[in-house]
Amino acid sequence: MDESNTPQQSKQQTNKFSNWLKTSITARMLIVGFLVVILLIPLSYINILIKERSFRQADVVTEINNKWGNNVLVYGPMLKLPYKTYSETKTYNEKTKTYLKETKTHMNYAYIFPERLNSDVNVDSKTLKRGNFESAVFTTTMDFSGHFIPTDLIEKGIKPEDIVWNKASVLIQTTNLKGIKSEMVLKLNSEAYNFQTNFNSDKNSSYLDVLESSFIKGNDLSDLKDDNFSIQIAFNGSRQIDLIPIGKTTTMSMTSNWADPSFVGNYLPNDETKEISKDGFKADWKVLHINRAFSQQHLNTVPNLSAFAFGTKFMVMVDEYQKSERSAKYGFLVIALTFLIFFLIQTMSKIDIHPFQYLMIGLALTMFYTLLVSISEHSDFLKAYLVAGISVVLLITLYSKSILKTLKFPVFIGLSLTALYTFIYVIIQLENYALLVGSIGLFVILAIVMFVSRKIDWHNG
Image (cartoon, rainbow, N blue to C red; front, side, top):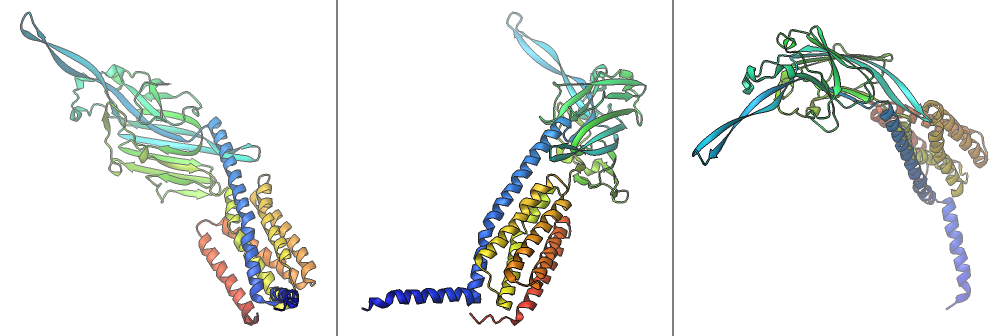
């Protein structure tokens, strides 16, 4: 065994491997691919950072909304009618050997929904800021009007003489008791009745607070006509406004200066009258009793009808952190395409680019997202995107000038990165057409790469 050749053979093998790494296209592709995978690690940490900051924003928004006023859901007004029921008990008397009958009177309640419920809602939206974070809030005035038919209870087995008319009242339930801005007054014919919080009334859900009017005079319920009641409620609120359509015919008209409404719930507004512009929106709803599966009279308890609510959500459709998160999702694409450009330049021009230089370029690309998130917290997203994009493009362009030793390749790389970041910005601004535009853009990029790489001899190495 000739051991004297072993070090020489090892050196030759090392030189062959080193030459293979420098000259082989396959080796360069493997190295570049490995570096792309490695750079997914800092990208994942950036995504975690964005989510943490978005959670912090959500906490601040919740704190602002809790102090200003939460979402507004109105369930009512409904007429609360007390009525008497009777039960009979028999007691056996040992002395007389007879049964004594005793009749007990019980007080129960019937809840009557209005025959017609009209709601005119005017919403003034604005933003509240806390440090670098802000929340969209609103002040709304809701005007309700309509009429009841409280005597239609015979089919429920309630006799008119058993109704206690002088103990009747009107209930309104809401999620935002704290956000009410002014005293509430029920106007019924020529009389006015104040509301107060009632903690003892039946609730349809634990999160709804109950407001109950003072007792209504009996003569005000004896001859109810159209538009015989009206109530105005002013709220400070946030997120959304919902109404439960308890009227046999329920209409709601809503106007606001909010430019990006999201109509939510079981019923959508009328398309013919709906108007949305940069200055706000106007929408009208009409819900008939045949459109929902509940009756106008309920005995003993108020049913939970939250599933039938409809209204408008007042939220930023795509906030700064959502945009940053969507932008970071394209981080892999940006790094891969940038490395592909450098790889094609290296392969076609025979310029040697060290893996460390690839790594520095990749880290510069990941820095774009940390710059974007940090700057967007102190400015709007467009300015943050421009500053981060220009900084990274200039950095990589100048760095590539020292690597490639020519001017045309760095200029091409700078223009390519500018086009790529512009393309991604357009995609993240779109909502309905993001997938379509993204697919077309990727197809065009693939076609360009196929065209440019057609003359490369892939079999050499």
